[in-house]
Image (cartoon, rainbow, N blue to C red; front, side, top):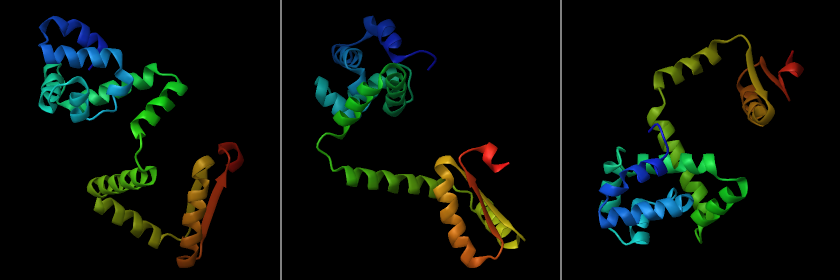
Length: 173
C-alpha cells in the first residue's frame, strides 16, 4: 500500500463495525505490539474472533492478515527508535525458549531455500567449480570467515583454490 496503515485506519474509521473499531483502536494505540501479533492473538487481545481480524485486513485493502501485518512491521521499523525496537523484540519473545525459536527459524529458512533453489543453476555452479583450473573465493568484511571455511574444505578436493579476503575492496587491489 502506498501510505501507512494509520492513515488508512483514520480514513475508513466511519465505516467500521464495533469489532473493527476495537481492532483499529488497538492498532492505533499500540501498533508496535500489534505488528508482531498473530491474527489469533490480536483478536483475543481486543475481544474479537480471528476471522474478524482477517476480514478486517481484507476490508482495509490487504490480501489478508499477513500482508497487513507486514505493512505494520514496516511502519514500526520506520518509526521506532533502537531502544523501542529492543522492547518490541523482548515483548515478542516473552517467556519463549530462545534457542528453540532460533532453531525453528533456521529450519524454516532452510525449507524456503530448498523450495526456491533452482537445481539446474546449482548443478551448473558445481560443474563450473569442478572444471575450473583455479577457484577463487572472495570474502570481505563479515563474509570473510565464510570464505575461509569454504576455501578450507575445497582445498581438500582441489589443488588451486585461492581465498581473496580482507576488510575492504582497497586491500584486495
